[in-house]
Amino acid sequence: MSERSERTADRVSASEPGGDGVRGRSPRDARSRVVTVAAAQLGPIARDESRGDVVDRLVALLRDGHAAGCDLVVFPELALTTFFPRWWVDDLADADHWFETEMPSAETKPLFDEARHLGVGFVLGYGELTADGHRYNTYALVDAAGEIIGRFRKVHIPGHEANEPWRRFQHLERRYFEESPDGFQVWQAYGGVVGAALCNDRRWPETYRVLGLQGVELVVIGYNTPLHYAPDPTQDALQGFHNHLVMQAGAYQNGTWVVAAAKGGTEEGVESLAQSVIIAPSGQIVAQAVTTADELIVARCDLDMCRRYKETLFDFARYRRPEAYGLITERKGTH
Ligand code: CDT
Image (cartoon, rainbow, N blue to C red):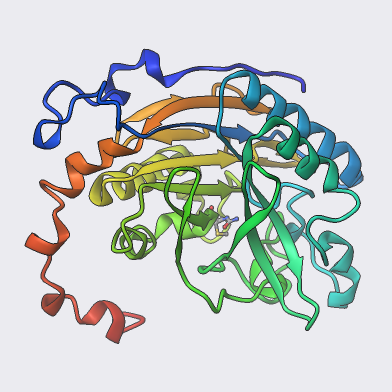
C-alpha cells in the first residue's frame, strides 16, 4: 500500500445516536446493534497487475480492518482487475480473462481463507462469467466464516455498447455486462438487513427506495467513476459533489447506513474519483477517505439509529402514497 490511514467515526458526534433516541431507547441500550464497518478504498490496479498481487492488497486491507475491530470490510466494484470497460475488444471472448468463472478461485481463495481466519466478513466486486455464458458486474457478500451468503448483480448498466473512438477512453459496460435479472434484494447479514448496489446504481433514487421498502439498514456500494464524462464534460468538476449528493440523499430518505468504497486514482491514464465514504441514516458523512490510494475508513454503525428516521419522518407505512407514484413503474422514460 502506498498510502493508508484509518479514521474512526465514533469520534464524530453525528455518528452517535443521541439521548433523544426514538421511543425512549438510549445509545447505551444493551440491545443496540453496532456493526463496525470499513470501506476499503483501492488505488489504481494496473492492466498487467496479477490477480495474486491484487489479492495480496485486499488481504492487507482485510487485516487492517480486523486490527480496527471491523465486522465487515467493503471492497470496490471490479476489485480484482483494472477497469477494463475502458477498452474495446472486437471479439468478446478476448475479454474473458477479465472475468471470474468461479468464486472463490485458486487466486481469490487466500482472501476467503483470511476472512475465515480473522472472523471478518467482506464484500467483493468482480466481473462474473457464469457457466451458461452470462456476464455480470457482480458483488459477492461473504460472511465471517468465509462463505458466500449472497450475490448482487449490477442493475443499471451505464455507458455504451459500440466502440466510440471519439472518446478519450471508452465506457463499454453495456458491451461487457448484462443487466441484473434479479433486481435489488436484501440479506439478513452482518447483524442487520443489508442491501447492495454497484456504482451507477447509486445515482438512482429507485435503488435506495426498493431497498428501503425491504427495511434495509446498511447499503454497501462499490464504484469506479472516471472524473471525465465524455457526453457532458461540464459534469467533470462536479463528480465529487454528485457522488456524495446521491448517497447522502439515499441514506437519509430511507433511514439507512451507506458504506461506499471507490477504486480511485489514475489507472492506465484515466483519473477516477476516490472520496470513499460512510454515511449515517441522518445523511451525514461520518468517515471519508483522504487519499486516492489503498485506504481504510472505519465507522461504528449503530443499526438502531435507522429507527430514528424509519419510525418518524420516513415512516413509510404511515406517510407514503404509492397510489400517487404509479408512473415510477409504468413508465421508463418521460413519454
Ligand atoms: N462504473 C460505473 O458505473 N461508472 C459510472 C460512470 C458514469 S457513466 C459513463 C458511474 O455512474 O459512476
